[in-house]
Image (cartoon, rainbow, N blue to C red; front, side, top):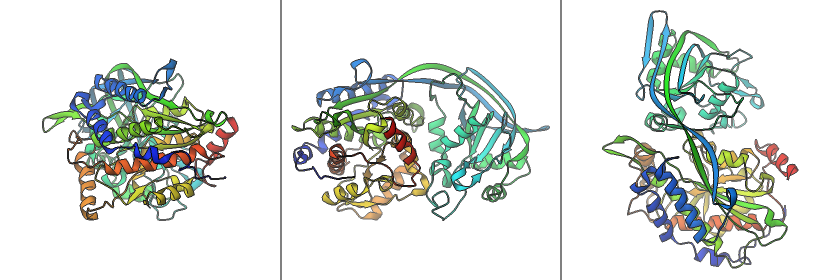
Length: 535
């Protein structure tokens, strides 16, 4: 692939000068204000956020790229609001009840008002079928009509050739567990939560799942789990004790390649009642056409999710989950990059699409829908850059680009970072599986070279230990909590610098003679090859 560094020729100095921390701050403050009511999907505050973003796209000179000449791509969703839920493990006359929120959270994927489950429970290890790693937790066992009890994550290993060692693959994510259980015709799937295997505490699971669930509208014939949920580690111990089993014993068995599903000799009984509503989700999309008559049919894609958790259970009297860091900051940065790109006197060769997606907090649904219904096909998309929760702590000396090293764009990413005096920091927590938890992931699955860019952990004038403590405190106390609120002492200069980096990298991809792809052996390479063939 021929790489041409067009930065100066195509006007980056003008674009860079037009990126301002003050505007990113203003967008962030507005989008995380209490008046936005937490930007819940299908709510007044969420609709207001989408309208605000569309208005800002128009002010930046972006043309509408949504449905029917608008800035909105409609995403068909369903709200599934729990009215009553009872779940228990039963063995003969013995019964272990799981209290809603305290012990158990979950939902039915059937999108029905009344759901009853009474099914045999089977321990299925990590619930993984991964031929490329020679791993199969099921060994051909029939899981139809069963409730699978699983550990999240993957079989532990330090071998990079086996489930990527310490790094979490998609097989370790809860979304995969539920998808696999549904494919096998299971009646349910219950994941035993631990902080270590999930990468976050129970309160994050509770706040995300203990409310109305937003789901993609179920298409006819698609598999759906009657019961998909989580139980705490303590509740998991009680469930397994009823079966005469212990957690350490089953963890050890689940780590063996010869593991086979273990009937637990008990049944899971669940009775669930829901209020169902149809929701029109909104991805917000604007486009800046490219200058090359041929290449303008291709595009670079910039993304950030606009949604958060809306109004939920009060914590210390506060029921608005503002999502200032998650992800008003990322939206503010997306809007500022759109502003700068729209102001370019000479546009790059390829077009640029700016996409604020909905329902990320519900399982990346907005980006999943876009991946299936793209404005520009995956085979004509040069790059997708995602912004998710950049922390405004000042000017960093390092950034993160997890996943970029897996693409043929990696030398370009390194060069752009060097020009901006950024060191690229490796993923500090590969075991958390961050690559599979943000909106670039559905785009990568259809072949687009896609990754998130974020700020690192070394900031000018701030001791690294102090920064680490700030980030640790956010994860432990503010992530998916009402306390994720705008702070007046936030310093957005680092987001300004990250915006300049994103523009420079986007312009490189927009001006290359050929399209980037994934490296040999990467899990997304085959999808890229298919997309390029279909273009």
